[in-house]
Image (cartoon, rainbow over all chains, first blue to last red; front, side, top):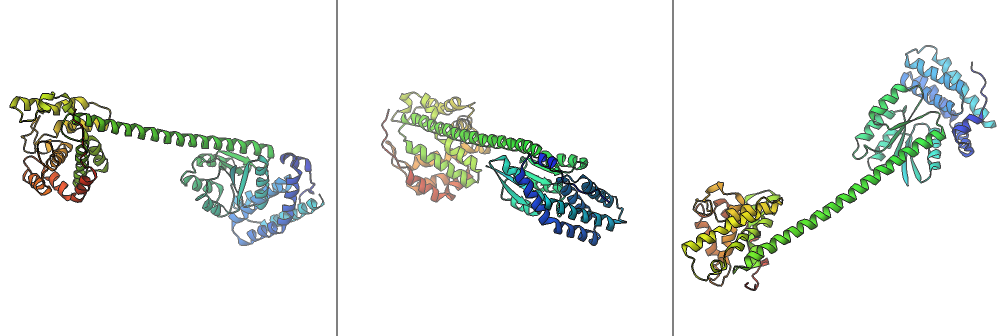
Length: 112
Length: 350
């Protein structure tokens, strides 16, 4: 399992040059997109297309890193690399963990 | 105002990058989640900066850059590629494929601003140089055209200076030059050659400047000795014009030297025969004689067109190149138009 996600505003805001307006806009977008992102990842797994799953994992890695969720981004990266290496066993569990992580981050951001 | 094209399949990244672009000032952002649609847009629009993600469905960033660079006039537009830290191999490939710089995810505003501003400065410099080059090119074109027009005017006036000492007129120069061009057209010479003979033919008799008045203006028939002096105008004209850097003057030199040669080798000054006579000389020989015959002079009436044509036809293969005679007759409507356009005026004798 992953460590609990804790929102650390400081490094995010630093990357955004202290721009609260952009920060708020990104939080809103993450929440708007979270259902779609989860569904896309699950669909990619179900499709059996490794390239599609690799790309979705890559996208989620960037998305989670944007909110300084290093643990979540690492997990997404691990999935991306695993699929890239052709290790396709046990991917259901990995995807499940990532979907849960996305929802957890969305929940925390909703409180921000 | 700079146009920044942003291509990323993630809406949140598109929004983030757009917000950062707008913070740069004087920028408008054009967003595409689909690289194929972005490429379509690029066919009719030229952005000032492209920011493109690497991993996208349908077409990845490397393929997009390659396709974008292949579009006409897009080879210098700066491209920033967005990649993850671990994608060093992708970065190398992108650099070789035409990316100018990179952004790392998660995007940092300070880094983004610095890199984007650098790229936009580069673009501003490119546009300035292109505008300046275009401006300079148009100035050079204009100046070249003015110089060429002046050259043509000087040639015409120099030719008239020679003709003033003759009973011939400015209209004769114009007519024989245009007849020469008509023959060149009839012969199927290249357009540049048609234009060159039009501009150079007026100089055919410029060597008459060096012929003494008592011979040039003698009302009666010339003696054998006087005629020998008169024939010297061909070489005089050549000496006057040869070795010029101007195409027109060099062509004028050739015409001056060869327009009295005859196809059967009985002309002067070098008794050249057939195609040994340069084509411009063969053409002007027909044009000059045709106009002389059909023009009125103080010592003769103008021949009818029919008589002049018969004279040319009788002279085929003897005085004249048969192909040049045929070419003049083939362009008969043009010949009539030239006669109409350039009619004799009263020119004071010097």
